[in-house]
Image (cartoon, rainbow, N blue to C red; front, top):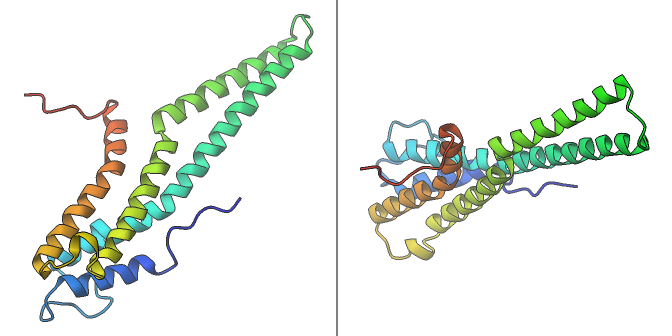
Length: 189
């Protein structure tokens, strides 16, 4: 089954270049394709827009495939273990059969734990959403659509940066909760 494709081959780069051209006054704008400028807005576009857009667009499907593979393997190991036990028809299991059933049980437990702790399904959904939202936000910014309509260059740039940071919160919150072992708590004062 083919995976949904979020970006055409060069879309993240083209969007980034257009965003930089729009967000910087003519005198400050780097040459087309020069996203290595020292300007803070250029760095933001490169590091908080372009690179995460690519990572999320390709990470969403990858995490989805990982979740599917682990889920199928868990189900297959569980069914195989059940089939072995059922095939014994109430007779005591031989030593090698007992080891096989125990190994499959351990495999089911390990895979279930990995899925629970690593959260590939949630990561897939969060990355898909972030990629689609970032891409949409980039095109809206370039064409003065939605929240960008009628804004000055400075206001538009601030609104764009704020929105991109907001979009990343979904992906970042999963990473934070996994690394801390809990969900982020309210201010503990």
